[in-house]
Structures are given as C-alpha cells and as structure tokens.
Length: 69
Length: 518
Image 1 (cartoon, rainbow over the protein chains, first blue to last red):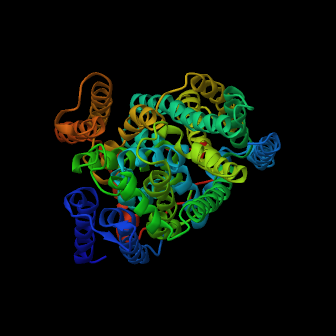
Image 2 (image 1 turned 90 degrees about the horizontal axis):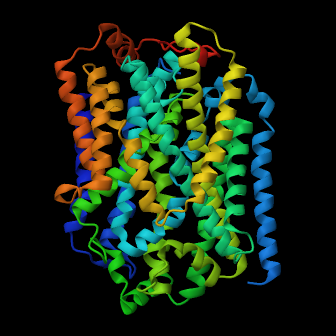
Image 3 (image 1 turned 90 degrees about the vertical axis):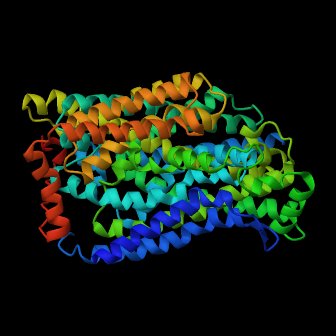
C-alpha cells in the first residue's frame, strides 16, 4: 500500500468520526422529505459512505496479501 | 387477546425452542472429539456466515427492547452507541492480525493472546476471571428481556420464571450440543429472522397507523404531540450533546470488538477473504438492521404513544401486544428471541472456552507439561456451560430495573478494559507485561469508582475515564520497563514479516488447542 493512500484513509476516518460523534450536535437540523432530519440522516446514513471507503481500502490492502490463504 | 391466540403463541414458542435445541444437539457427537471443532468450528467459517454471526452477536435483546426505549426517551443521539459502525473497521484492523496469530500459534480465546503476548499466567488468569464474571450478568439481561416479553405477550399465562428457565435451557442446550459451528449457523438463521420480523413490524405499524403519508404523517403527528425533539440532538432530556455522544460511542461501540464473543470470532475465519468482505459488509449490515430498530424508537413509538408514555422499558412489547393483533405480538417475540438467543449463546460459549482453554487446559495440563485429551476439554467446556446455565437462572431471579443501564454499567466497561492492552499488544512492540497489568487493573478500579461511588468529572462517562487512565498507564509503564526480545520476535517480527514482507503463514495442526505456544 502506498503511504499516501494510508494517510488519506486515516484522514478520512478522523473527519468521519469527528462529524459522526461531535460535529453533528452543533449542526442545524432541517427536515428533508417531510420525515428525515439532518441529524438523523448523518447518524443513520453516513456510515454507508464509510463502509464504501473501508471496503475499497481493504480490498486494495488484501491484494497485497497474496501469500496468505 | 383471546385464549386461542395465547395458546398459538405458546405453541409457536415451543416449536421455535425445539428447533433451536434440535439444531444444536444433532451435531453433538461430531463436536465431542475435537476441542478445535467445538470452540472454533475448525477455523472454517465462511465470509457470509462470519458476517451474520458477528453482527447478530452484537445485536442483543437490548438492541431490540432497550434501544427503542432509550431512543424514545433520549432521541436520535442515543444512536451514537453504534459509534458510526466503528466495530466493522476495528474488526478488520485488529482482527486480521489476531487471525494470523490464531493460525500461527493456535489461539482460541482473548486470553490466549493476552497471556502469551504479555508473557504472564497471572495476567491471563485475572483477565479470564473478570471476563467470565461479567458475562453472566450480560447473558442474564438477554434472558430477563425474553422473560418479560413472554409474560407481557402471553398476558401472564406463562409465568416469568418458567419463561426465563426455558429460555436459558434452549440457549445452553443448543451450544452444549453444537459448539461454535452450531452457534454460527443458528446466528445466520437468527439474523434473517430478526431482519424479516423487523420489516413486518414496521410495515404493519406504518400501514395501520400512518396510512396517509407513512413516515411523513408520523412526523407531522410528532410535531403536533410534542415528541418532535426525538429527531434531533441533544434530545428531550439534553443527554446527547457531544460529550454524551462520545461517551455513548465509546461505551456501546468502540470496545465492542474486544467483547469476548466478538474477539473469538476473529479466530474462526476460514481465510483472509473474510476480513476483506467484513470491512464493508459488517457496517452495512449494522446500518440496515439498526435503522429499522431506530425507526421504531424515534418515529413509530413517539407518533403513536405521544410524549408521556411512562413504561418505556416495555415499549416494544406494549406496542406489539396492545397496539397490534396477536400475530404481530408473536412476530415481535420471535424477533426478540433472535437477538437475545444469538448474543447469549455466543457469550456463554466464549465463557466456556475461556474456562476450558485458559484455566483448565493451561493450568492443569500445559503448565505441568501433560498432554490433554481433546474429548476431556470438550466435556469440561460442556460442564461449564451447564454451570453457567444454572448461574444465569439465579441471576435472572434478581430482576434488574433498567435493562440498558444495568448491562452497560456492569459488563461493557469491564469488557472494554482489555482494549488498550490488546491494541498495544498487537501494534506496539514496546508494550510490556507490567504496562498491561497495571493499566488494566487501574482501568477496572477507575470504572468501579466512577460507576458506583463518584460522579465522573467534566461530564465524561466512567468508561472514558477508565480507558484514558488504562491507556496512559499501559503506555507510561511500558516505556520504563522492557519487553523480552523473543516476545517481540514471535508476536511482532513474525506477523509483520507475513503482512509486509510476504512470508508464508504456518498452518496450525488439528489439535492446536492442546499445542498452543507458551
């Protein structure tokens, strides 16, 4: 794995968890589609973005592990 | 509810119980001869089954009953207990190394790793006892939830004690029969059952109570009845500002991976493919299932029940029995069984593995250079399961008041105390026995003091303080003490050479439980 990719991955996670644990409580809370507030949207659906990033990163990482069954 | 409906619900429960017990006991003979098969399913769990068994083992009865209740009381901020699905990331980041160590040295339990990496039998013994001790109340919580729900759903026809006794026997006999393989397959059935029943519950309540717009109508009702604040942080009671969110994430999520039954699942993967897919499937599984639970707590319940519903602990069972027909009550009960049984069986199996591996095998055979018969290890593990079954029934008789608070106060903070030393032992070659021992003991003491005797300072939870003290001491004490070179070679150089330099992985033999490296 390139060092720059790992650094980007770590930076993404820091930003993601900061938003998810802390920043969300300071954001305004508008209502979308008549039922979904911004706070709910961030907490419920941002992990989907995280899952995609984690999946892509580890897919690349495990390509380097060819010797492991 | 009519007598016929109650009779049918009881009949349904008995059929379910019979199925679970049959599933476990049918592989009794096959698992009797090999401890490796009984405790790790021969390290052959495929990616889909591993994802299912890990995800559903985290979702306990607390998730189905306690979480909607907590969300109803405190709003969406309580969802921070998933920690942004960090467990998925940690399972891969830590789990891959643990899996390599398990393959290389035959590790089966959390204590196998900690005892060997920190070259201390005493440390291993203390950690085993602490983990085992706090598994019992957590298992008891699942059984209390099941017992309460059965009583409410059958309107008291099935007494509480009978319900928990039957629940305990179902869980225990299922594991005694089939071990890890049976647990993993049954968990896969349970996650499917849990997901399906949640969909049915939400569909019923939405169609029946919000026919003109679904969730849009429900949120309008919330705006009118004064429960709209459930959809924002910090929530109606102000509990979830950023400090509350952070504390809840640490308590409910960050330490999840070192809970003994989740930790053990890092060893049972069939190949590296498990970890590759777990990186995205596990967080997605959490999102899909947990979102459904959240909708019950923050939208359906507040819209239907309004702001002043006092019996929030029984929110789901009351919604299912008093606001829905008997078939929905039965489905709700099945869902609770799915979540409760899957967590209880996994925890009990991990307690049995620790008692058999870390205490019986290690102290009575390995330390005396005696060879152990795998059949005896399995028999001992099964005996421990029977003892734990009786203990759980006794603890359940002392019924706690608030399910979530009780479990989190007692069990989670204690399980979490092995997180700093596990992380240090995996990723920091300078981590020493003295650091691990002092850090973990200090963490336990701080957790006890701030949970029961002193209000934790600055609004942070007891767990945050205990982990901070624990982590700081692991680091500082390790700096002034020295780790033996052979430990570094075995647990760091060797694993690094596999991960970064393409070295071949040794394959452990079939009887690794008896041949684990000292």
